[in-house]
Image 1 (cartoon, rainbow, N blue to C red):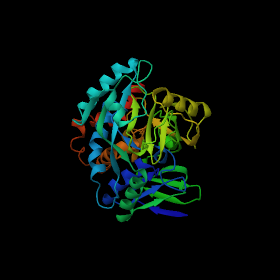
Image 2 (image 1 turned 90 degrees about the vertical axis):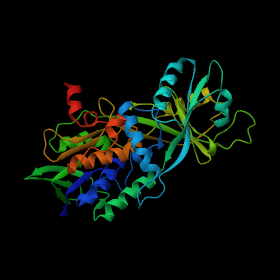
Image 3 (image 1 turned 60 degrees about the vertical axis):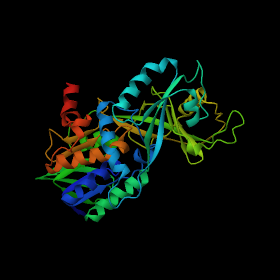
Image 4 (image 1 turned 180 degrees about the vertical axis):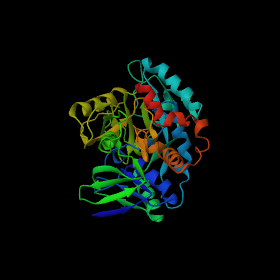
Length: 386
């Protein structure tokens, strides 16, 4: 069964694959193959989707900063992609040094940062618990971004189709072979597609896809993260609280974060458990830890978890996303290791991918922001593993 030919064949319909496809679509016929029945089914659809500077190192923060303009003023064909929401970073006494460091880093990226005393923090999030055994210090970045993953995924898919490309779901890849100057990909239904460029944007499955294609894997690590949802039951009479106005709140270290989602709250213990590629599921102990950590720094009483889920965040050895050609396979392009920042760095990574694949220039401003080619392309991983 002939699925067709393309100039660019992308495996993976999460935000990495779809954003790259949208950037490539004006340059040639682009086809995205997604194994599941819907795009963004795994990591992209299970993120809390908040763009902030409290995760990742300097390169990731550079990619995040560069991508903000895309979210705030998206191209034609996209619905609104974000809502400006404060990001409040808090610390217990033993997290003070990490908070000070993060504040200095954030001030280097934006002037919309303010150090807060207890009254200032309580004005943003009245549920915070203060004192020697709870929160002692904090600062706010007033212009964090709550992203809309559905709007991102659907907007990117529209861009692909507008330029004559295709996004095909239910196309689980079972075979990959190099035939002449092309890559041939076969799905579980027997359909075949061919293209000179194969983009591996398969997320947690990226190393497995490379092995299937006879390409050396990068040593990616899928890590499971847990999120719970709960009604904001107060520990005392707080009838005037409206959690919909609360900021994103995260401890300076990777201990806990929570944020509003409509009339409820979402929280995570910022856990990272090694897992296998698949449909990740939360474990009871991780849900309990999430609830315990929220209650330790707030006056909230989590009586019932109303919803829970887990997602896989896949990292490279240096925890920086990778985009670039495989050294051992002509036409095989890596786009992987987005970790927990795939959504907030997608515009930058898509532009990088399109530039490398089409022979264009490195996007203006990215190197200056802390994301030069040497930090992104796969060669640096070989040096790390040597």
